[in-house]
Amino acid sequence: MYDLVVVGHGIAGLAAAVSAAELSPSAQIAVLEHAPEHASGGNSRWSPANMRMPSVNEVLPGFVDDMVAASGSGGDRAYFERLASQAPEALQWLEKQGVQFHAMDYFLKSWPNRIQPVGKGAAIVEALKQSAKSKGVQLVYDCRAQRLHLGRGQAIVEAADGRQIIARSVVLASGGFQGSPDMLRTHLGPGAETLRPISPGTAWNAGDGIQMALANGAKASGDWNGMHSEVIDPRSSQPAPLVLNYPYGVVVNQEGKRFVDEGAGLVHDTWEHLSRTIHFDTPGRLAWAICDSRFFQLEDHDAAIRSDMPPVTADTIHGLAAQIGVPEQALLNTILNYNAACNANMSGFTAGRLDNLATTSGLQPSKSNWARPLDAPPYTAFPLAAAIVYTFGGIATDVEARVLGQRGIVPNLYAAGEITGHFYDKAPNAVGVMRALVFGRIAGLNAISSH
Image 1: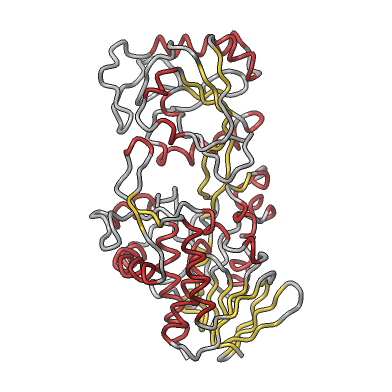
Image 2: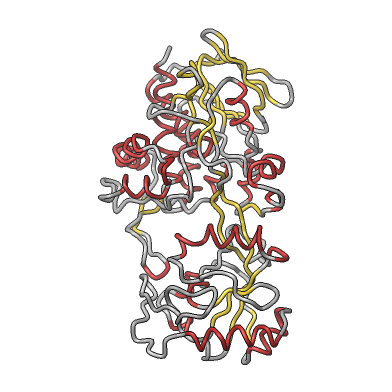
């Protein structure tokens, strides 16, 4: 019998295993991973792992209020307070595992100060993996845990191939259900199953841990209709080929018509809405971000395009329309009407913040910021499609990472990371890895101390 079994080999799961092994060096601990070793790590391995912190020693003032506001009425203030209070200690602990951090440069430098591990999420996964191995933690790959049987003083984790692993405590850290076509279709609606995964690791998060917990009486939590999605270039086969230039031009559908307010906010405030609109409400699930040469004069403009594919380029709108396959006259009318609604005085244009340079009344949909005319060729177009990063629906946990049931705490069961349902409305930016790390550590320490 193991003292602790962790389901999931991402940052949350590895943080749980390593923390538990540090606290109890003689404990028998195993980590069960759905993927083969070369593909292990889930979303964590492919994440930029941005941390919403100016340094490893502090969290930004207002962090908790920002998190609660982003999560709407469903946000758990106590959860985010615990995250804020424990984040510095968790990052300092990571440094002791050999992970280094540096300040981040962002597109247009418009976001709050953040830091990032050198080597991104993969660096954390590899550092914790090596630490786990050195402490005698058993890492079991190609092991898809699908069933959980909880009894007095022990739990049995059953894998898809029939293997049974017995433990005193279990930490579930196997991600959301973005890799399950059936669960996506059920909870996000028809067509959700065709969403492209943002990275290779995303597809391994099949919702198994969530189903295991629910089958054992765990409460559901989070926005089960919600997800974090982003806009990508569908031509690219690279992980996360983001296209973030759309606020500084127009977005059109395949009919050559605008359908959103491209300037409703900075990209991290609008990419979820835009990507969902493209995927669920736009013919062909495809749109085009069109800019003129002024975009390429912006500071850090190259950071807005993460695709390895070049834009479609033309000297005229007619020529651009012909290349991207939209009706030429319709696109020309769209651009002419948009240009006519732009303010002739562009002196207030400021790309790095909301500048209130809006279109005049009459244009539908309006554009709230950065409304400059598109009249400086050459014109460029990037295709836009949606990619799913993670889902919001999950299981309820408290600030000690204990799984909550209908009648209180589920004994000997803990959870951390995407599997836990603490997000509503939209994803707070640059906190996913933070919460995986913080609550993974809490889960591991509490699980190994509980017996």
